[in-house]
Image 1 (cartoon, rainbow, N blue to C red):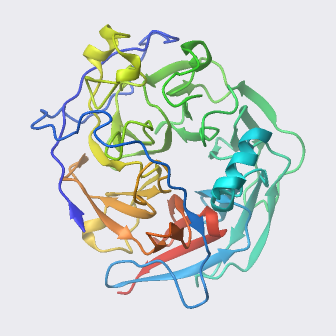
Image 2: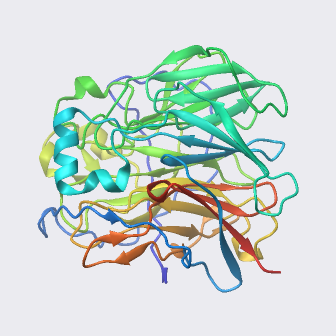
Amino acid sequence: MRRLIPFLGAGLCMIAAACGDGGKKAGADSVAQTHTGDSLPAPFATESTKKFSKVIGWDSSRTPTAPEGFTVTKFADGFNNPRWIYILPNGDILIAEASTKPKLKDKVAAVASGKSKSQNLGNSADRITLLRDSNGDGVPESRNTFLSGLNQPLGMLLLNNNFYVGNTDGILMYPYKENANTISGEGKKILELPAGGYNNHWTRNLLASKDGKHIYVSVGSASNVAEHGLEEEVRRAAILEINPDGTGERIFASGLRNPVGMDWAPGTNTLWTAVNERDELGDELVPDYMTSVKEGGFYGWPYSYFGQHEDPRMKGQGKELVAKAIVPDVPLGSHTASLGLAFYTGEAFPEKYRNGAFVGQHGSWNRSVLSGYKVVFVPFADGKAANGYEDFLTGFIADEPKGEVYGRPVGVAVAKDGSLLVADDASNTIWRVTYNK
């Protein structure tokens, strides 16, 4: 199914909480588009509903479903919440295994609701596993622990012979040798980060600038909509920029409730991110989105959403910021938990997929029907998103009325051979999607 969505407008602002100076310009080279329509419903037009999914797993006869001409195979399984994927230059595939560590009262509530079964709550592996498929046959010849003893790792980055890990409470840096099977010893903590967070906002992703001079760090909010006060949101709901040694921190963009996936649009200097938006305003609010990220840009959270739509729970607050809030580029559906993001830079898929973006949608809990639970594709033309998105990898929902799902896709990555790898953390599986030429 293809959904066509109008292009939306843009503006600029710095968040009041903790912005650095504007400094140098990383520059998004996309041109702002005019907002041509607004179909968002009023807040609380429908009741806020909780519907947690129950993961039943995949039997041997089932896989997710891709468009005609593609084949989906199980690349590897037996993980413990494989949430993120990183491809090293030599083709080695790194899998970050980590999950939420709730407080005891939250864990008890999650078990009672069935949520713990869908997210492996309280059992975080805190490791990175290396898979090596040297002959490219889709079957890893070796598998070993690359790094362990971490603290809810997600983002991974190789830069200047150093390997970086985004733990929930900070960034670690390790020396790296080409073709290494493991990394031992303690990493150097180059940056402290605020730990924990609402729901799954513990994730910290990493992305190097195209010239290698900076690292971008995504940090989600500590709350749904600042209900505990803004003092705990400093350096959060933002993308930070640092030097490779951890110095020079500044807020590159803010008002991004939970930005996780980050990537560069091919052929441009434009940073894009996938953002998991706020809860409890009703079934159709607020749409998660994928957007170009403008230096110094403010994207609304917590005061407003999709530009100047004021959140009634923050009524009358942050008026100057609301007036300048940027409208995201591509809405991706409400409560889809859009988290993964990877531009397709390979050549193995048909032309229509070249330079477009794949987004992993982990799936809803705050909607009366299950939403997300799929990977969608956002086509691009000349470095800009072109007319909405379409389903790409589906079939994760087993029985919607019963709330049963086979798995939950999240991280996506393009392997060296051009195949698409998808982390299905709830079923502890990595899927591989190839095209039949």
